[in-house]
Image (cartoon, rainbow, N blue to C red; front, top):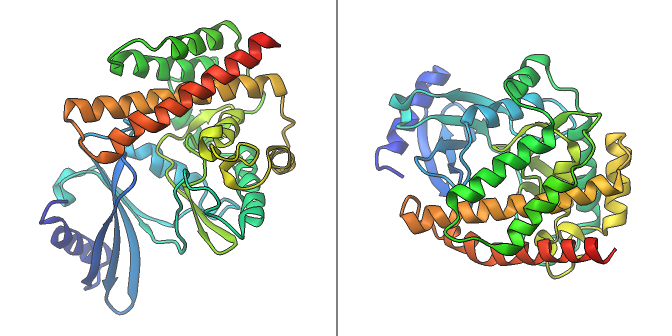
Length: 334
């Protein structure tokens, strides 16, 4: 954080609100690697609690700020809990970089790698988690937002997503990983059916990316990888064993997989095609490897030496390789 950012922000926010505010608290929230995120409290006639998301020069996932903003916009006043948006600006002269401002939601986020972190409320949170994901798949997106997302996007959707992440792997890898390459070949050779339903895909829907307060999910966060695509992509990513490595029967350390799928089907009005879901589960592991490889490249090159990039390239990468191997072994044994 630059030393000038707090004073730049309060000057901006007072002008934006057309009211005088003083700064009570300005605190960076660490953990993500795609945007710098700040928790802010300002005081005027009332106290306002805000979240500021500032674009980084170098990030784990290269995405446009507008993508995240439009995704949040699509779910304002819906059954999907998202923060209330206040402003977005691409003008670097205001705060030194493009930014997005929203109201703070109550609740906390948990590490996706911590077992039983949601206890004793894991069952109730699990029901909400999978039901909300179904609502995302079911939601009819505003035409203007939908067309912005699908503009210049080639079909079929599965190939577009696979090509994108394979390119990241081949651009950022420092060596060839045979297990990963075998997974990629299998995906291209055995494509899924093109989805009849094209919906907003969150892109990183998982435990750790939602806020909760006791037994209530209060917000779905981190939409920077959102796009229009097959809703099974989100489902498979959320189901990935990496988010519940020590209890693989309960994705996200919430509820068991069979119950999760039933809740999602009811909420989304989509019947899961088992074979297609298997394809997307393998895709999720390959996509995960692309993200971890990119993280390692950022750290090794010195572009972004945030320790999360070193961790991501190490432990999660090993786990996703094991998941790919397990899936391929199951496939060829069958």
